[in-house]
Length: 153
Image (cartoon, rainbow, N blue to C red):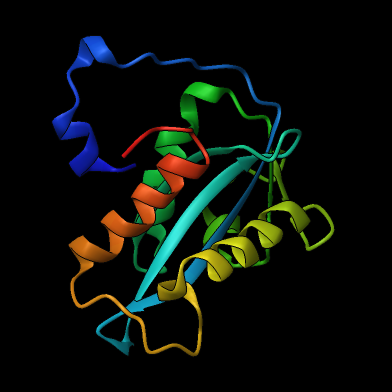
């Protein structure tokens, strides 16, 4: 969620559309702020059927950040989560809804490649990086809001 953008928008100007989603792909993507020893993770979920981004959060690669993302996904009524084998997913998703493995996460992995290509701050070997977490989160959030949701920023 792009909190700085939300703080500048009047509630009457926002149209919210929530649809039911049967299955979602969830994954995390590594980047860094300042130096590689200061990792910053983009956690996001996409609709398994359409490939559209449902929600995203920034943070460390820890359970608390997954719980934030899971809270954002609650209104969608998701019945199946496709993820990799990262332990946080097994700890916080019920076995009935959790499907770990690479077979059903190809769309989100493709989205990672697109993001790494278009946003140089996400490339693994780059001289372009953010010096603050606010700037890092804002740049990536603006990109996602513009290209995924069609919002002018």
